[in-house]
Amino acid sequence: MNLAAQPLHLHPDRLLPAEASQRDIARRLYAQVAALPIISPHGHTDPSWFAGNAPFANATELLLVPDHYVFRMLYSQGVDLDRLGIPRADGSRAAVDPRSAWRVFAEHFHLFRGTPSSMWLNHVFHEVFGLRVRLDATTADYYYDRITAALETPAYRPRALFERFGIEVIATTESPLDPLEHHAAIRDSGWTGRVITAYRPDAVIDPEHEQFRDALHQFGELTGENVFGWEGYLRAHRQRRAFFASRGATSTDHGHPSAATANLSDDEARKLFSLVVAGRADAAQAELFRAQMLTEMAKMSLDDGLVMQLHPGCFRNHNQALFARYGRDKGADIPVRTEYVRALKPLLDRCGNDPRFQLILFTLDESNYARELAPLAGHYPSLLLGPAWWFHDAPEGMWRFREQTLSSGGFYNTVGFNDDTRAFLSIPARHDVARRVDCAFLAKLVAEHRMDEDEAMEVATDLAYRLPKQAYRL
Image (cartoon, rainbow, N blue to C red):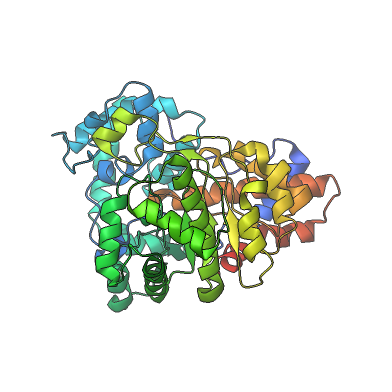
């Protein structure tokens, strides 16, 4: 290690207001919520970690390879993903020593200055691994050795970290084709950690998904239904949703290109489905089918009580060459403009006033926070707003979300925070950032005499803990 390396320090007032009187209020609010249990109702951690409880392999496999927030930045600066050991679409990898990949990461760590990734990673380095010097080229091996050695000890096994982080419940997200064997293993192991699943049917709903044809065949084999007929296809969904619920699921999740919904007659839906399964649906018909399926999922939620989540507005796999070589979720997903008011009306006409229905809306298009999303959630009892998501999961994005949704939606038509991550060790850091930003925002309202401090205390606790439990029926 370079003994002259710069110290790594986490300031206790980070993200709290610079103005002294507001900072004092925020400190008091934060002190109340800092140690609350973590509710993680939507994310993408791997359930096999908690089922097998095997040690994580090394620093690279844990902190670099699964985190597209990290390697997309490196790629943007010309770092080939093969140098980082990122798996390719066919499952192969370049022959890269994980220590060498970590060195590449360390040499480029300055690229993350001021970004959310820097905050999350430095929190992990400082709080989880006890590191007290900054990561750079001169400390790369020191970091790699310290982290990898720690991962070999019982205290850094997945279940031990889950308990250390104060996680009360965490939801993973699986395809309808997943046997959920890891969730069964967790349940049968006697471990008390609560790891549940969520139903993500995109691969068997989106005709333009590259796996759609194969996935549909597997869907039929798994359920024993004729999924090439409309009624059998819907029965297959109901069957798998029930199975997911038996493994703890309280929600579904839908990652559609748009928020479009439809409310076709049975005959219209059946004819459209025939075009889809025959491979003859054009782009407009594919969009209409996705739209109809959101309404079908909503109708099923009336019966089984699963909360719907909609994550629209992303141009997936924008870099075609990267997608061909490495597959999905490699950092090339780009936000696009998204409309909600007209798009959601067919679904809301059908289900929006039913007390059994709940839909959590997310957006990558911040322009519609105040114009569309907050007014919708501030009216329909079935609608709630998910937190600032993905590209906006940052202090500035969280602040803009609160500013632009408060007047029409209030705090109680939102669901608090969820971390939506594959990067397991960053979960406490992400929740800590959200709690600090919310306390800073509330402190401003108190300082402006728009809210009393005792009310802000209650709201801070609700945002950090009560609202996500309530919204996701946990």
